[in-house]
Length: 114
Image (cartoon, rainbow, N blue to C red; front, side, top):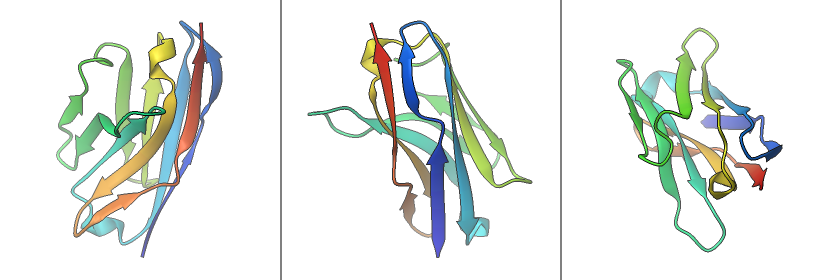
């Protein structure tokens, strides 16, 4: 069984920063990548950033240069540092892990006010 638990969401003004964290437990040795997705009201869930076991990082064009994904293998966590936040970044952010299957966290709300 795999569990992903997110933390760090909240309300911030445009231009501000937030840091999301995701703690993984269970069969984490099966993971080959972890990342973050987001879903805004009325929109499809989209990839924000992901990082492979080899350290390769991939970002959505809309967040490049503003967001940074990192992974702590000792603590089994993946984090997303979000800077220069914009109102269009408002969404529920989900932690994701891929391996034998796809695993999702419960989501954390990020709201950016203008």
